[in-house]
Length: 112
Length: 131
Image 1 (spheres, rainbow over the protein chains, first blue to last red):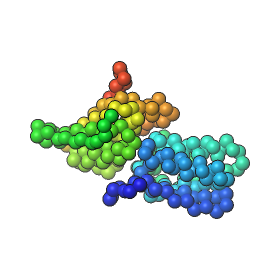
Image 2 (image 1 turned 30 degrees about the horizontal axis):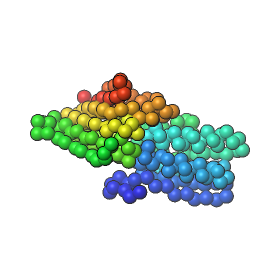
Image 3 (image 1 turned 120 degrees about the vertical axis):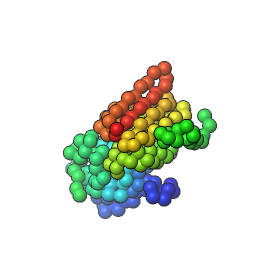
């Protein structure tokens, strides 16, 4: 998806090391782009990833649909009960504010 | 339903900086709604944090009207230090979904005044930030 100058559309990259993966998202996560993030996270979990880091440092906007994707991934990891984890990194600006309003900054493991 | 975006600002509206926008109720147009929200906040002289709040609120509310098949009509009114945004459309599947309540909770948390009504198959909202 192409971006508009000054406000990039959503993109994500994955670094994988066995059962560990870091998903670095960028741009805006909303109803248009959250399905892509969901597919990425679920595909990694389907493929055996158990320790996941989601880096939101380059995300400039997230809404309730984006939060829902992250919560869904966390629920699945917790339900699998095989020692998996999901960590959020890079919370800042308006993205951090949305996590704090919803209390999700205390639900997830958040690292700076 | 035909696609397309229309934007209007009548001469009589210039004094109060009122802009109307009609969007297809599809997710890919949420970003445009956020741009318009940010523009209105900037014209009202709101700061960065308040602008982010208006963007979030407008985006969340438009999300609730997305997927309905009914065009979303938005009106942005910017005055000195305040933005009022009114929206009209039809309820989409997100409203009854698991994120619907979360979306409205987020809006309530970031704006100073918020109203959302659903009646006879139509949905409308009004938010105010500042003022």
